[in-house]
Length: 395
Image 1 (cartoon, one colour):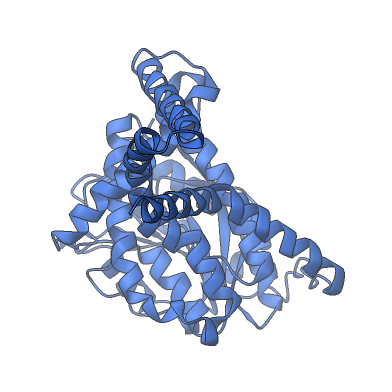
Image 2 (cartoon, helix red, strand yellow; image 1 turned 180 degrees about the vertical axis):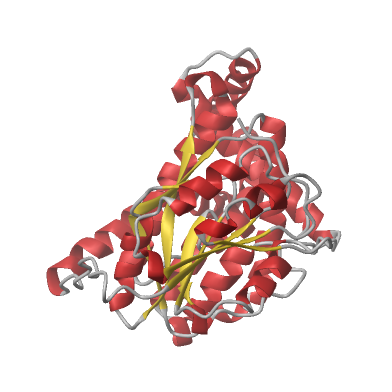
C-alpha cells in the first residue's frame, strides 16, 4: 500500500513539474533540433497591391467608457484603406456604446446592433454573415492594437497551410496594481513564449480573443453554449489540418483586473470553459491522427486544466502521510511544500496590504490560478454553460 502511495506521489510531482517547467524545456529542445533541418518560410510584408482584404470584427457590450478610444485605435491601424473593413457588433448593449460608434459611420466604421443579448459566440456568428473578405481579424473592445498589427498578421497567410494567426496579449501592470496584476502579467509573458514555441513546432494550442485572425472560409459556426469561442475557433482550424501561427509583432494591450476578486471571476469562467472544450476536443487525444499536435495539446492544455489542479492538493496529502510513515526524503519534500505555500500566503498578505515584492507574488498567483481551476471544475459540473456573462472590472 505504501509503495502505491509513493508511486502516486512521484507521478503527481512529475506531472506538476512537467506541466510548468518540463514541457517548455522539452519543447525548446525539440525546436533547436528542428531549426537545424528546416528553414523559415518567407514572411516578408505584402505590398499594398498584394495585401489580402481584411475585416476587423470587434464585439462590444456596454463599453461606453472606452469604445471611442477603441474606434480611433482601429481606424489608425496601418493597412490599405480600400482593403480594410471595420465592423463593430454591439448586441444587447444598453449604454451609449452603439451611439458613439455611429458617429464614425462616415469614416467607414460599420455597426451591427440588436437589442437582444445572446453572448459573444452568437454575436460573432451573426457578424460573420456580413463578411466578404478573405481574412477576418477578431479583437476585444477593451484592448488596444499596435498600429502595424494587421500588416504582421496577414504576412503569415503567404503560407497556404496557415489557417489562422494569433497575436500576443500584453497586460499592463502598473506598480500600484498589486498581486493580481503582477501575477497576471507574468503569467501572460510565460504563456506568450509557450505559444510562440508551440506555433514554431506545429501550431498554437488555442488562441486568445484579444487578437486573432483566420481565413474566412475556415470559420466554424460556434455552438451557443460554448464559453471559449476563441479557443473553439482556433482548435477547429487545427483539427482540419491547418496551422495557427503566432505573431509577436502584432499585440493587443489591456489593463489588468481591478482586483483579485475580479480576476478570480474571470479565471473560474475560463476554467469552466476549458473543461467544456476538452469534451469537444476529445478526438485530439488521438496521437495516431494528430501526432505532434496531440503531444502539444496534452502537454500544454490537458495537463494544466485536467490534472495539475487536482494533483497539487493530492501531493500535499500524500506527502504528509509518507513523511509520517516513511520519513527521509518525504520529510524534505514536505518542508519544501510547506515553504512554497507559506510564501504564497505571505504574497497574499502583502497583496492585501499593497506591498510589492515580486518574488513572492508568483507562487501566490500559481496557487491562485489552480484554485480557480478547481472552482471552475465544480462550476462545469453544474452544467450551466453560457457564453453570456458579466464583465469584470479592469484598472
